[in-house]
Length: 327
Ligand SMILES: Cc1ncc(C[n+]2csc(CCOP(=O)(O)OP(=O)(O)O)c2C)c(N)n1
Ligand code: SF4
Ligand SMILES: [Mg+2]
Image 1 (cartoon, protein in one colour):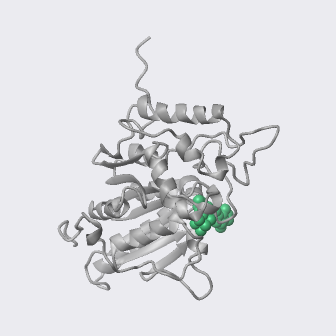
Image 2: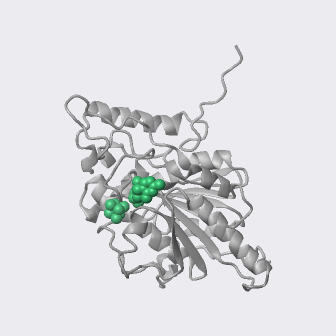
Image 3: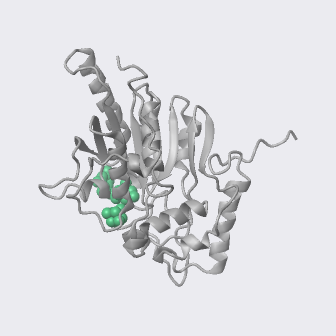
């Protein structure tokens, strides 16, 4: 058996401690400034060489497997669009069985499955839910570029209210076609899965090293874990690729994408937007996908963000407003 002591990783306290080795390297064809690709690079760096990765269909499959090339230096396997959870579970079970039968030496081998917002947050929710109810050490990372990016930027359940996508083009009859509020996947996982040992949200660039440390924590907790990452996408969000890091930071600092971790039922804010947040308009106005919004729309989005931080039972995490008092 792999002992809990063997399962621990050292936290990365400064940029000087970031491992130099790359396990997701050159050889991919993602767009310039693709933060989803940065999520892959950081998760592989943090996890290290004794890791297998499985990923569902989407940009992080298609742009990473152009004919005869791949950026993955660690073993990687493609899985069907809604199957990240099932794939992680099957892989963990397979490794455990091989070790039990003595066909594989006993050691820690990390199992990480990634999925996009459509593949994981919409289509693959049931599989992820099953994986988080298991007793295997596995990590599921949902990289959220807020659209079905690979098939040309269609809206998903995680697309921000008001955003233009190919499914939701603004027109003269209807200015806003994307009228759904973003699905709260990390909150759903944290609230609904008592067996899940660790849930976090993260952004690959802000605060620095935060994603890598969350990946290490998730791999050390000794049970199933889930991380939801915020991944600006220059093509779908319509901005110059040089601003990807800034857009990520503005999303976090405006509070529209809450940053937190839940460990043993305790919430810890990585960026506490209850105390300080910049106006959400600073984030929205930098992106062409929101260019059709007028002041009234931005005020509405601001109001919803404020409500999330000021009125929710667990601010930014659980969208209840407390029980009704007895009639
Ligand atoms: C069952 C199934 N339906 C539809 C598709 C077509 N398809 C391939 S990738 C994709 C979009 C995936 O979106 P997301 O999971 O958000 O990943 P992204 O492309 O944004 O990286 C779709 C619809 C598919 N491969 N399989
Ligand atoms: S479309 Fe977006 S998610 Fe896909 S490769 Fe380009 S930047 Fe990355
Ligand atoms: Mg997507």
